[in-house]
Image (cartoon, rainbow, N blue to C red; front, side):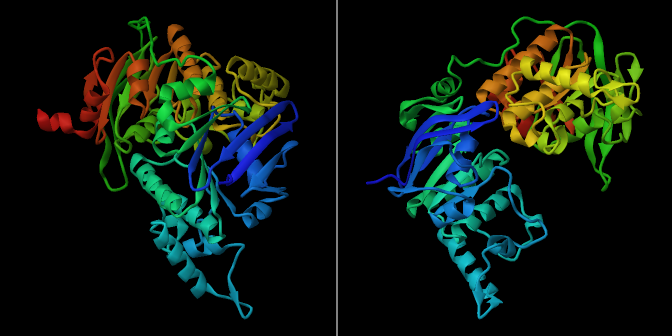
Length: 505
């Protein structure tokens, strides 16, 4: 049987960087073919080439055993290829139906035939178990539902080969399982799926074949049953995989952050944070574990001055900062890695060096007097790029041109600059590959050794256990338990996070 897709010798160069170098991939029809690699390894560029968004400098593309040349996504769509991007491309103010038919509106006698479109959408949704309601506003849909609309949109256009670029990056576990159920339905109907990811446990559970890309070139093709997640990760990074660990203690008696009785009430009068108290010392990492939605985000925003407190106090060293603005807290020495880098961490359309200034625009080396010091800011950006291994062809490209992992390393480098005394790190390695994850761990370890105090919030329990000196669990807006990372297990934390430990007690 001929391959559904065959990429041979694909090479793509950009100024100052080779994104793909002699990539070779063969995708069997009716399978889920995973393509894995570090952020910046060239996965997305390769898929943009297959979808007609980029032209390769060298190499050939074959679809259903026929050599093709794509000049635009329209050519790829005509060849039966559809792509669901990592960042959804839907209009929130339109219905599901309007989004699906946009640009491909059905007509009858010169008029838009929405009845035919609705019938076709309902048929596709039922055939593949997508559960999509045509007349709902996209603005009212959750993330998992929006993704199903994106899948339906490409199926509506006749796609038989689907490219899913980091499809689980923003999904909760239940939505991931729903997506995998949809993929199995699609595969059962003979569709072929290219699954781009760096979440290796998910890849091993859903893929039929796996291709590993490292620094722009293919290094291995493996079967899921022949490798472990750790072996796959080591193929991706080209070396043994590091683990999260702090090694020796650096905790001092010097209290950096002292939080007392912190309470936050929502518009309905409900306490989303209830009498939170804790302290973090210089050279200490305090980890906070909790199921998403139990007050972690509100705690971070309260500490950063984004949300006003209902009661309680926050002290940074000898200074009460409870009433200070976010800017004043930053100037006092608080660094912040936000949970959502695109909403709060970077401006995608601003350059790399301009993003280095964000949140630090009142301090050297970014300013001289009241004016931005472009030369000094650019010089310091080059330092961050080198020191934190931010892979970019130039500091003058926009942040959107960087992979997610490199955007995250830029944020970490920016926040570690300026000698902060406290780092608030919310999911610092979320959505990054194993190489970037290890690099971020190492930077936190080094800063801790230099007496930085760290509040670490993460959904990765292994990361929390390995990178924390102390652990606390937040449940329904309260700190309900504390744990020693040396003896606690992920099962212990999971029990405390869900309230099961309270029920047993």
